[in-house]
Length: 128
Image 1 (tube, one colour):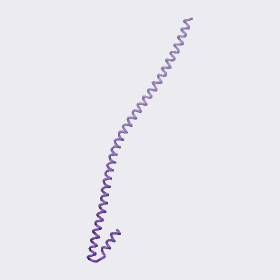
Image 2 (cartoon, rainbow, N blue to C red; image 1 turned 180 degrees about the horizontal axis):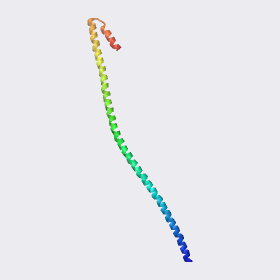
Image 3 (tube, helix red, strand yellow; image 1 turned 120 degrees about the vertical axis):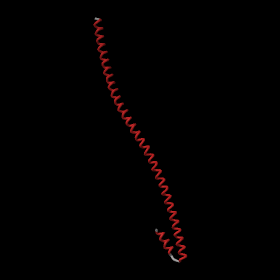
Image 4 (cartoon, rainbow, N blue to C red; image 1 turned 30 degrees about the horizontal axis):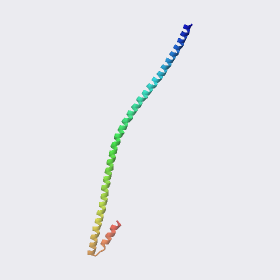
């Protein structure tokens, strides 16, 4: 009877061991499946990161070129405005000089000739 109990115990233990091994294999298969899914996702993300890095590189180069262009525009505009301001200032100085000469000439002509032509010309310039 001792042999039969031992055989029954061995069979019970063997069934449990086989059951545990099968469960371990099932769990391992789940882990393997999860690993494969995560490796696929990782590969997709790496591809996406490479695509984004490439796009960032292109945009960075374009941005750098546009910043240089903007700075050149700013310099050109500042230079043109500076020259224009000098031109406006010079034209004002020229206008004052021409008006002064004009008035002096007509005043001297008025004194020599004795007419009021200079006053009417001065009035003309004041109106303008």
